[in-house]
Structures are given as C-alpha cells and as structure tokens.
Image: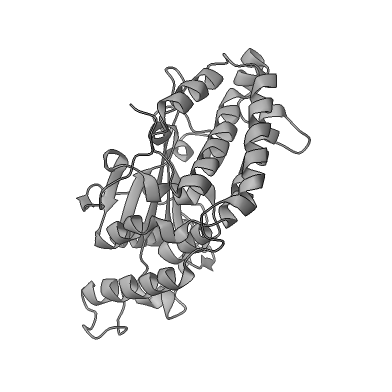
Amino acid sequence: MSDVLRRRPAAGLIEGDRALPAGYPHPHASEAARRIAERGMILRVQVGSGVHGISIDGGNDDRDEMGICLEPPEFVTGLARVPSGTDGGQPTVQFEQYERHTAWDRSGGIAERSGAGDLDVIVYAARKWCRLALAGNPTVLIPLFVPDVETMVRTAAGCELVDNAHRFVSKLAADRFLGYLSAQRGAMTGEPGAHTNRPELVAIHGFDTKYAAHALRLGIQGVELLTTGRMNLPMLDSHRDYLQAVRRGEVGLDDVVERIGEYEAELTGLRESSAVPAQPDRDWVDGWLHRVHVEYWTSLPGHSSEPGVGGSS
C-alpha cells in the first residue's frame, strides 16, 4: 500500500446489521434507547484498533463500534425521555446515546474489562454527535473517514454526512487532539491521577504499550487531519508498522515519549498554521440536521406527511 493520501469516492448506501445488544441497567442502555438507536440509525462503523490497522496477534483487542441515529420527533420538539437503564423505578433521562459493552454480561457487570471477542458500541443521537464533531473531538470524527469494508450501516443521510466530512474539520481539532494525546501519555507513564487498566503490559514492558500506541496514533491522525483535511483509515503502512512495534514492546519508553513530544509540537504549531478553516461549517450542519430529521419523521408509520407534524413513535 502506497503512503499517499487516499481520497474516497462518493459514499454509497450500506444496509447491514442494525441490531444492538439488549438493554442493561446502565443510564444509557435502556430498551427504549436501544429501539430509538436501531430504528433511527443512519451510520454504524468500526472505530477501534481494527479500523486503524494497528491490531496485533495476541493483542486481546475488543471490537469498538460507533453509530449515529436520528431521534423521533417527541424527543426533539417535545419533552419525551427514556428510562435510566432497565431496572424498575429508575428516573428517566434525556436520550443522547445508546451505550453497551458486552463485557457487562459477565459476573463483574459494569466493572468487567473488555477483551477479545467483546463488543463496545455507542450510538449517538445525531444532534449530540454533531456538537462533539464540530468541536473537533478526535474519536467522534473517525466515522467520517471509515472505509466501506468497516461500515455496517450507511443510509442516504449517512452518505451525505460522510460526503461532507470537510464541513466538520477546523483548527479547533488541534486543541482536542492535544488534550486526548496528553491524557493517553499520562496513562501510559502512570502520571499522578492517571489510570491504566492494563497492569499486565506494565509488568512485561515497563509501561502500557497500548496507551502508548493510541497516544502516537492521535498525534499522527491529528497532524493528518490538520494538514490534509482527512484521516487515513486504515493508517498508512509506515505508521501502522511503527505503532504495531510499539504495541509489541519493541520500542522503548524514552523513544515513545520523544516521538509523542514531536507530535505535540507539530500540533501546537498547526493551531495557527493549518490550512483548514478556523471554524467548522455550522450553518451547513444545522441545515442538514433539520432536513434529515424532518425526512425521517415523515417516513415513520403513523406520522403525518406534513413536515414537522408527528405522533408517537
């Protein structure tokens, strides 16, 4: 694979699996929230190590997925809420996402750590996802650049979103990438207040090599985004080879810290020098959100064909 920026053609429809793991006693995992997420889903992709191309043999990676969904009208124009989890008598919460980790089904519940074969999935309401993406959130921006092979669902609204990825890219991303990179580095080196949940990696390599690889990935992808307007997924071969070597413990901590410092310096400079816009295109995003919601509502059974008028979902 050549180390050149890979531009993608116009996005196409993908009608794959919408089914999500069953509800759970967690504030964002009620059955009502699951039904909203499944029914209104416009995009579902892999966002973990697999899509970046940095998984390693024996790495014990789980599968991370992210989706985006449209909400029924009563949750946008009214005051409808969903239960907080599946336990009876729980208070209701505003619907913002459906979040589920299959590791929770083991005896330790929410305290269980995800591992090989587990699925961690989060489906954001489109309005919340757009707020995070417009602010330059590194994780939330990933679905805009995921290739077809790692995409399970992409409706017409999802295609339009992906085709307009550039509307979300701005200099605001520099500070977000720097913040995430710093947090991953702190977890990697065990700085005061930082947390690592991989003591087995620390015992073998002296530091959390998975956090190290993710910190470096954030540096690489932040620089890519601010210089080209896109992220390469999977990552370019030269980057993937290096990050896999880091995960295997073949790169020393001093070298990793030095490389992270180089990316931090480059991202700091790109806050001002990047050719991407200073601000994202909020007007386009606002128009897209309004239009796709109205189109979705008028397609729902039992809803009036008059835009903006709806009944119960």
